[in-house]
Image: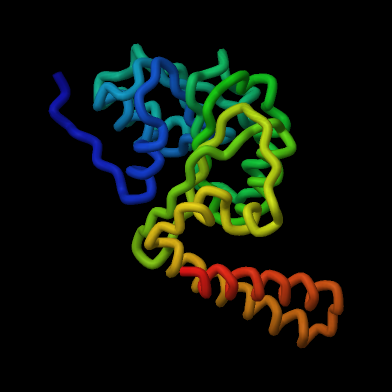
Length: 228
């Protein structure tokens, strides 16, 4: 029996909470494999598929899983996105990437994902990711903000289903807008600072279209802050 216990940082801890308990789990772009190792070690998932586009990154996950004696419960696959999966899991995690990249992986791997619940953590471009989920036939049922050091990570949970979102819901998150958790305020302030900086750049460059776009974004985040 291996006595090494995996612990997770705040970001991965929230992702693990949203995964919950399931028979089969997949981590697409698993990198070091700590999340999968934790879920297996704690008995939250029975079997795991760990994939990564990089064979070198996947080797890190192989070593960790081997050290923990969990090798017989894991299928390792090198490949791009969900197309590397052997079978559709109950829950699939795609985390630590740009929202546009996660959106592409979902669009291209929609068939391979089947009816899997998705737990997603975009580093940027959450708006684009939520739109892709809506377009691909997913409904967002939970959202969390995970403060981790100086950053606030948005984590989105979705499952197959029809949904239509407003522009504000796509930008902020339908669940976050409805529930208004305490972490939404610092997150909204950060997003407003980013939008103001982008607006200043657009004004300096004289790009009318970009100016209008960033002005709208600034107004949106100011409105969110006024409601908190």
